[in-house]
Length: 451
Ligand SMILES: C[S@@+](CC[C@H](N)C(=O)[O-])C[C@H]1O[C@@H](n2cnc3c(N)ncnc32)[C@H](O)[C@@H]1O
Image (tube, rainbow, N blue to C red; front, side):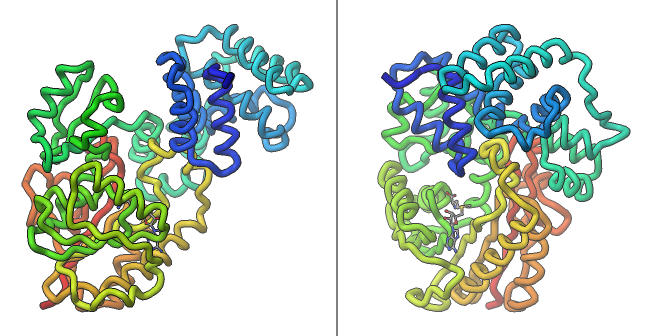
């Protein structure tokens, strides 16, 4: 029988993440394999995985106060056990400290790490004794240390955010990125209207409210939707509100030919199909063939038509597509993902400073290769779930220098006044969770090609 202990499952997932897996995918597949697992145990396993990954910086600071050798020298499995125990002691009120210590040591035994049980027991018991006296850095005196050790950012990222936003904003952003992401869904307007879906959800166990900006968005404040038949029937799609804004900014129209350049898993492709009432022809490209399959499957579930998927690496010229043959192009580019740390908490530990320049290089190549495909007078939207200057303003500057036929649009001129707080002074979209209805941090800019 597979072990249904939530701490054991959390440990396994953290181990997989340490070896390169994505936490959300690894956790989903582990929990799917255990359909009979108690709902509270599933919630605890999820909380432990996401909590340890989000708070790792804070946990490691606390553990280092109790551990004589540098944590980097502790073997990874033992360190993950320590983090699991530490998270329960420092962050979870509902678990008594003695239970957190006992369960962690027991788990070490079950994992055949007997040799480390004394070490783990000593550190966690020391932590329980000293938790109230840990020397946390002071936010006013040392914001960089505070961002690193209290708000759990790797030091290079803490230093960047401090530089980009100033201490107060950097702390507000880092604090927001420690919270669980909101549970947002997009009404599939091909099948149902938002009011009707809200009524259905609220008549079940959910507490559902409309999103503030996007007309088809819904926040589920409490309850689950996965078990509802509506998911398999395709009446909604899990999607963040910021991500839903992007297809609106492209503004696709029925009868048009649209390129979704980096389309998988298809959240925005299927949204565009819905916005055009299935009357646009959408070419959806992605690097990985198996990810193109996700677009097709999503489109089938949601009843979307007119979508044609192809695998293509857009750092090369897509010579199978006619120049000037698209009315609109969306480049929802691969990026550093720093705007979605709440959803993919392992990203904060995986990203390295050099990644930002490398992502920018790919983004510039993709934009350069799709530019000739847009017809004169057509519209291109470049969007990202990040906000680093390398991937935003630097890429845009390089693109407009190399392509003077593209002019930037001020998105405030074409969107409802209620949305204007979402745009910067140049009219680019810049959402931040601490300011904008708890949305993910997205960036988007629109261009028009000279007629
Ligand atoms: C931000 S995700 C797209 C999300 C998608 N637009 C949605 O809303 O569901 C970026 C996508 O770009 C794809 N990608 C990465 N490198 C690429 C390349 N060189 N050419 C084409 N697609 C690429 C990735 O596989 C990934 O699916």
